[in-house]
Amino acid sequence: MTYLADDLYPKHVRQTRNNKKVCQKRNTKKEHPMVTTNAKTATASELPEIAAQVREQLVSSVKQGQKLTVDAVQAWTKAASALPFPELPQFPGLASLPGVEAITAYTFDLAIELLNAQRDFAVQLAVAFTPAKAA
Image 1 (cartoon, helix red, strand yellow):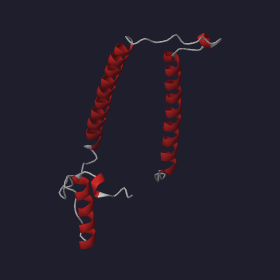
Image 2: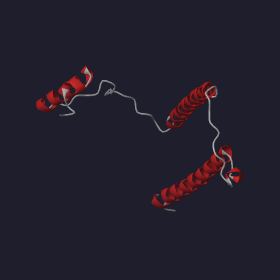
Image 3: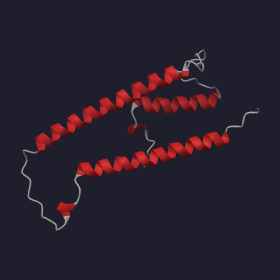
Image 4: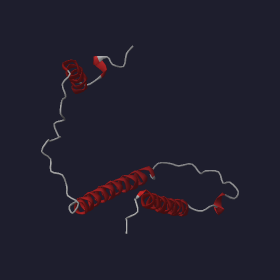
């Protein structure tokens, strides 16, 4: 049994696979439809503006996804709370452990410290690799 059987792949996948074979046989280079040869290159002054826009869009998208996830989990939790749930056994010392919120906060605090250390390290490396300017 082969995983490349045509019955296992949608039509567009089979066509893509076949198109690649045809292009390889012809020894021609097929350009991606989204790539344009006359694309404008950003200048150094435009780069911070472009980077700021990309950063803003990325953060906005992540926050939107997070909100949707929280809403979905809250709806699921509300629906699941109506189901019967057996009492879990009690373990000695378990009540003295920190809660989920405290553990999450601690984990992110640790991640922030590690990321700051990595940033400092990367900046030091960048400075070390930068040639000294002649006086």
